[in-house]
Image (cartoon, rainbow, N blue to C red; front, side, top):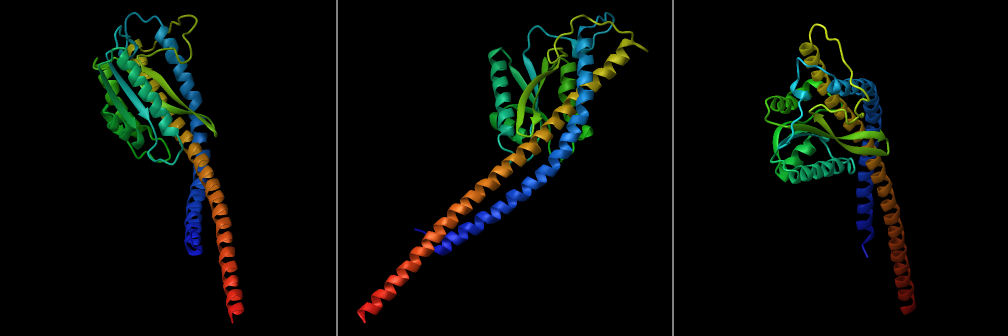
Length: 289
């Protein structure tokens, strides 16, 4: 059995750890509210532009066809935008979205895809893609607590330019969608070529009147479409990160308290045994005299 001093040292160590996890829980709770507010504020715009893009994919525009709208019969080269966190200690958040990405990679390879390029948003995803040997075309890390569109566009644009040049046949994005504080769902969506699958193909094709001309309007709208979806994915992932970290740190704090209680019980038993032993020695010594 460990000595009383060793048990007291262990108790002190666990108490110090619990102070850290409790502080991290409180910080995550504060950041979570702000991240959720940003995420919810961005959702209406993202859903609206997604709906417009879905209708545009079915619209009859005969004189101009944007590269983002062109579907290829055979998909041989795929780009993947993987959105993860920069830091850990957030439960299985990154593991779940990485599992979705790995399953997608396997399905693409079995379907005949010969080349996969990745754009990694977040340090955890970057390290993961490098470990499994996927070519990383671009990456961005250290985003902080607030998503900044100007930091995201550069790395993502590398895949978009490759798609426009015909070097990539499709672009997908993997991220974690915020459901509620206790639940976050990993998602994989096709970003390009434009599809209405996310909201369902419109029941009827819509025709638009463009001013000044279709090319200017469609080009600008599709750029906004990509920016909105990437920004929304990062905002969703950040809200999910803080929620998952708060829950994980609360569980760690609760577990630390249970360990402290168990160690305290062991310490009390050890101390009582030591006192009993000393009393027995005193009584034995007195009897011998």
